[in-house]
Length: 186
Image 1 (cartoon, helix red, strand yellow):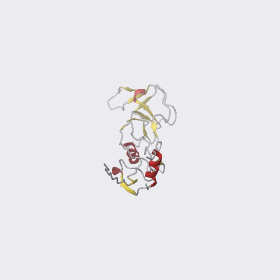
Image 2 (tube, helix red, strand yellow):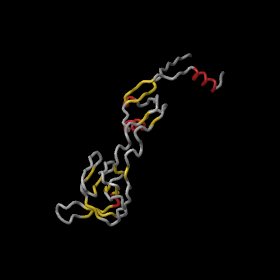
Image 3 (cartoon, rainbow, N blue to C red):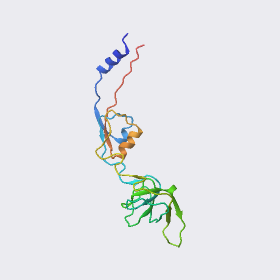
Image 4 (cartoon, one colour):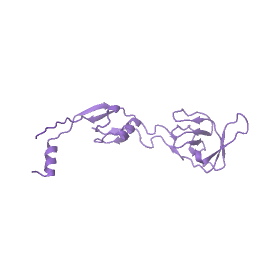
């Protein structure tokens, strides 16, 4: 009888690298990457709100507790942000920030004020100071275009598929699946 290490050595000595094939991302689940994968897009692809709340254009100064802000519009995830001169917008998690916005105040740190007159824009009062840059996910903060996101030899599971799709990869090179034969000897 041979030992474990010798048995493994005999098996791997006869093994060779499998051929490479390119597959659509949808067909890559359960496969092994044949080469490194580089992102083609930034992740996130744009500056966005990390929390539900109010986006403010505070001109890079801390917005003080007690300050009141008129809400110009509501921005949902998937919406196009308005291009206006406003200073405050209701915003949902993942929604793109207006160009002028520099902070997001979570909904738990604002107080919605009743309208004083019909047709008046809704207003909010800050319950705590809000620092510029707070609760914002910046473009490319997770992954930059050209960055290696997965290495050759990586097994592709659900998390890897999501990463690849999120960074703009639609086809990957994978190792061909091996053909296996079983021989019953007794």
